[in-house]
Amino acid sequence: MILRLIFEFHAPYKGYPLYISANAFRHMIGMSVNSSFGFFTTSPLNCPKIYEEYFFEKKVSQLLLPHFYYRRSRMGNLAKIIPIFFPKYVTFDIFGTEDELKHIINRIKSLKLMQLGGCRNLGYGVVTLHSFFMFKLENIQVPEQGTHAVLISPCSKIPKYFIKYNCRQDKEVLWNNGTKRIITIVPRGQFFRLKPGTNIKIAAIDGILRKYDPLGKIGYGEYIIVNWEKRRG
Image 1 (cartoon, rainbow, N blue to C red):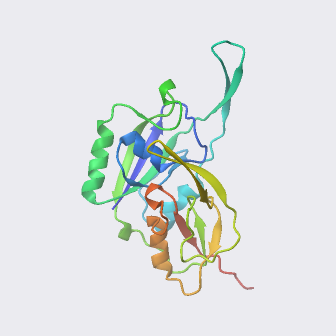
Image 2: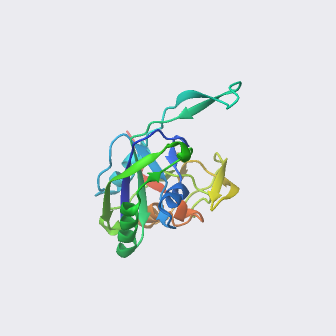
């Protein structure tokens, strides 16, 4: 089962402007869950019925534009420029059994205060649960044809279906239970040609489940299958 959670912001947000890590969501609710990254949108998402709907808003996820303010030190002689953001909504997709997902919903509803991002002690990142949907993966009609895969979230390991090439790679800081680790990732938006003979339906399902990424349970390795076959004439 998949649980889609849509949170609404009620305070400025300080953090990465493209998405919120699954670890941040885990920390907020105090549970170890199999979660996607949180993607910003300007309006709340609906329950997806087809494959393209599941990924649509994630593909065009809002890149937050910064606002700046100056903060002086206590001595008043040093000023620091602080970037902050004003997102409207953020969406996480959670995997689990029906009972597990119901437990997550009950946990969220029991929390008096929920915050995402940095500077939470200053009141930033306050969110409330706007809406949620629970649906079955098998109810999403996945494609039977495809030529490429596009990364929706960064990946730490290239899936077996992809033809490898000298693609862009970045370093990223991964925080887990207070421990800092530097990992090498392929950033979201990179695309790969699929290997000949790939079972497209299975590859599409594995992309939703983030199956082949060692960090898949914290959002890494999500991808969408697309059909970019050359048209003649």
